[in-house]
Image (cartoon, rainbow, N blue to C red; front, side, top):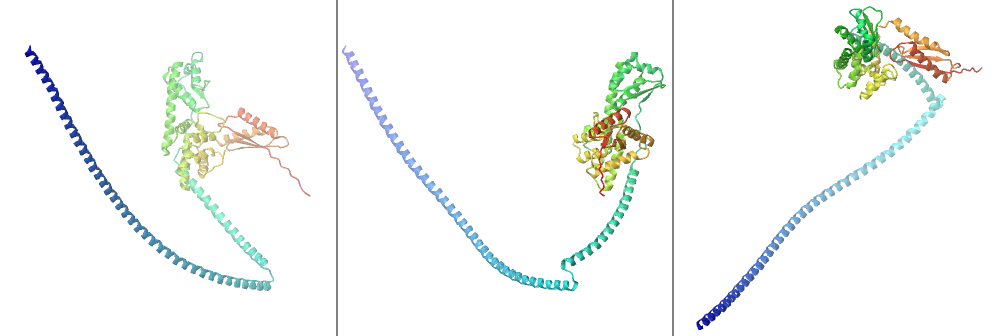
Length: 510
């Protein structure tokens, strides 16, 4: 028991000693850590003080450098200002010297002006004395003498000027007429074209009389199909082995003629076959139209032509006017206009372009109330052609005034192409007969005094009696005459009816 107590006491004493030892050791460790922390704090304070001093030194050095640079720049600017100041002082001195010289010159000029004024007064006084002496000697005043001298000089000069003007006019007329004849002869000689041109034919030759019945078909089905699809009139009469196709549109007539020729050659004629052949021929004709337009444009060396204009030109290949192919005529007019423009120093491209397109209205697909010149000019305007080209088209029949020399050349070239021998098949008798028919229609109405067919039968100009026809009746009369022309005559294009009602009052004073 005692041993157990001693052991417990020993254990208790050992535990107490261990706790006290650990406390003492921890105390020692805490003191050591505090000492290290204090050392670290002191070291940090010293480092920060040293860094602060370094930064202050660097800032002072930078400030010193900046101040040195600014002082150097200031010295340089001060030197430049001193140089500028010296230059300004020199210029000021020079200006002062020049100003002094100018003042001396002004004084000299003023002195000269004074002397000149004195001299002018003396001369004026002498002139007055001379004039008085002359008036006294001649017995005329100054105004009378001046008028006599001027009248004499004017008469002499007018006589000489009139003689010179007459001489120049005669020489000019002779030279111009000779030059114009030479130019036209030279142009026509250079023109290489056929004397006559091919005319579109509307008659088809048949192999036998039996073919007429096959063309007509059972109960007329074949001929009705052909007429409905092409828009033409097929005339089958007593003419042996021939059929006539009638249509105002040359394109439709060409499609119908070609289609019927192929149907006759093939022998198979029925509505389905007719429709198939017409569709194929229509495509071929449209392609030919484009090819013909492009061909003539290429041959004449024209570029950037609008597709609508090319197509309208190609349609002229199937159009004739008095037996003259319109496309060949247009090409011929372009060649003549280009040659004349080159000889006269005008714009060759504009002249050729306007001449080629002058009848383009005849190839337009839509037919309106306007004549072909107005329709062609409108088409060219829509296709952004040059205003000179548009004017050349619109004025080639004098519907509007030509605005440029190239437009006048188009008129001249058109007349040359149409008037040369063999160009058109219409005889002089037929032409005169057509004009006479127009004038007879106009003269058949009451109140008409005179009637004139002008512009190749494109206009009928009528003079009426002012006592029988008033303004309202003149309007009605123009309508009635136009309607009678439409009913009685056949003609291409349109005819303009112009009523002229003029009133003249004459009195005599006795």
